[in-house]
Image 1: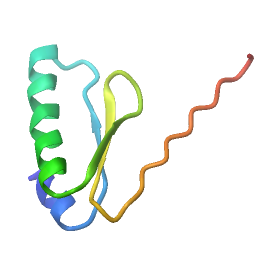
Image 2: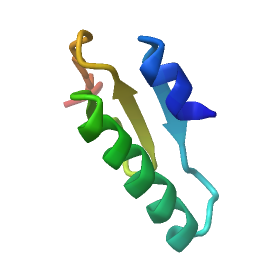
Image 3: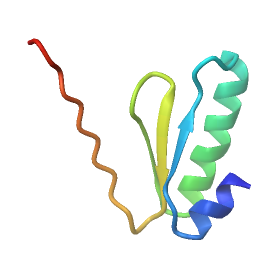
Image 4: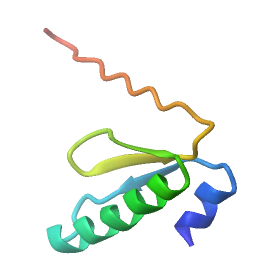
Length: 68
């Protein structure tokens, strides 16, 4: 299960592109609850892609805009 990776100290990338909105929301709610209980973090990279990380990993998201 995906939460076992968080418990094992691994960060995970969750891609919800193309998924029905209600299903994607339920999955993200479940992962957010797991992150909270494990003192981890959950951040959006884009509208449909997220990174979840355990408590000892810092998430830094850098977005480069080309042509501005």
